[in-house]
Length: 295
Image (tube, rainbow, N blue to C red; front, side, top):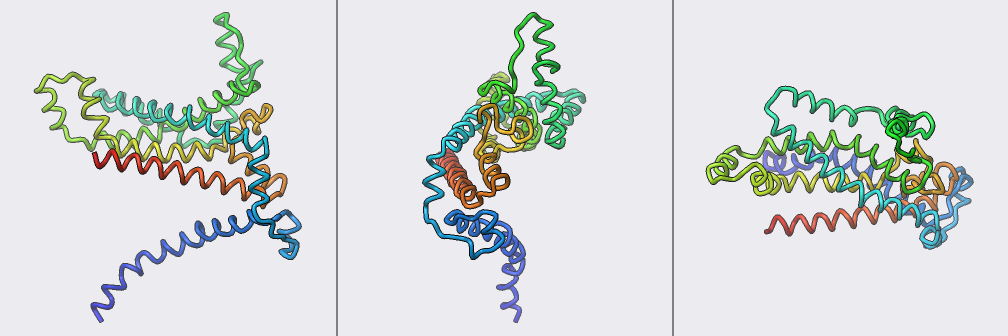
């Protein structure tokens, strides 16, 4: 009896997690996959007898949709520009704060972390006013320096960069905390040995700190890239995907088709393409990290 209980006990402990994962993650994914092969709209949602199986039609149409292709391009722009910016800035801030010995650096931890816990809607509204071409603070400062005003949210490329700057400001705090926690786990004896060998601060950072942070960098790069692939709140609140779909992200495209146009099957097809992209990017990063770990 005791042996039977000891064998079954691990399954009892993990059962709640497996049940929750199945109900709230795996099952919705399977339902969305099924919907992506149908023409579900409001009529189909009200009465399942109105549903028709249409095979890969939604996937073919969404891949030929110029708005979706533009949303994919915009999302890649966000990822290629935003992810390195977030990682480098977060790591740089964490290193500077970790090197600081004054108590004022503890205050900076709070200052940098606060945007991460601030409501994104409130933040987006404030930044929208800052970016206002006529009354915004940024253009006021530029004009006071006799510089030309910038169309922060009214020119497609500039608008994408503007959204990235705001998202960068929000993302630095959380990743900084992760890097600081990893930095404080590096044994001091490594630095003491390097100092005895005559290594300067830059050499200690590049030869000890950064290599020892590889797992933290890997974690931050994975979570940050997934977040940018699902970039939604900022363009939804500040630009609605405009101007001329210039800030439309893949996640916002899916939302508009699913919840504003009620094309649930079409939106589900788009969401699965995004899901496959997220999985592929994650596997590539995991593979690259595994090679570095083996090394």
